[in-house]
Image (tube, rainbow, N blue to C red; front, top):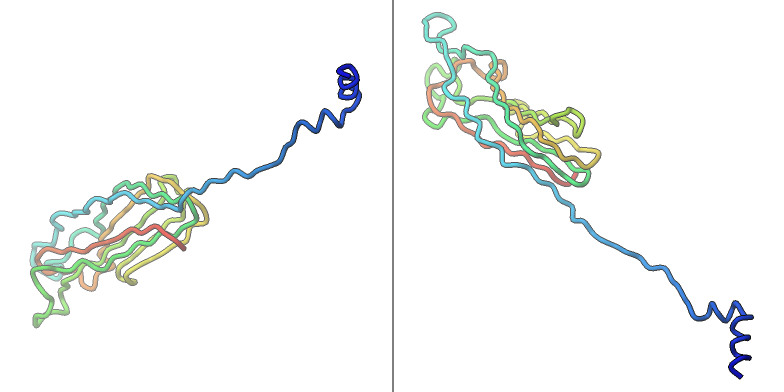
Amino acid sequence: MAGALGAAFAASPAAAQSFTASDDFDILAFVQFECSVDDPETVFFGLLDIEEDSGSDALTLTENRYVERQRIWASCNYPASITLEGDAMQNFLQTNDGPDADDFTDKLEYRLRLRADDNTDFATVDHRTVDGSSSTVAQVGAFHNRAVLRTVINVNDQESPRPLAGIYAAVATVTLGAI
């Protein structure tokens, strides 16, 4: 009987296959949507030079542009937007409400620019406070970059080239997030 059973298994390929079975299954994972941005450093322009001599240019800013650059990490693992926000710097010590207010200003407009260090990882975002409080650019894909953040005081953006004496300050924000 053992010999007959062995012969039956050896002769029948279907009988040999019935001892195995297979099926497909899925393997899944989820990676969360995430953006991160370094903490930008405080931008301190220091003492802005003004014309100290009398005459038509007295008390005006002597430089056309004051520029500060810093590097920050900007990263998103999905297509996202980059927003730069900020309003003009305000003078904390004086308000421009004197009898000769047309010749002075108590605010300083500035420009922000965030660009990829290689100019290709994401689109450059420019913001001028004189044009409004924010600027946004949608990015077409994920990005991870040691970006260049530039802050500029441009004399041509100012309401008046004669700033009142005092301390000027504002808060600017870099936001990475959903489009």
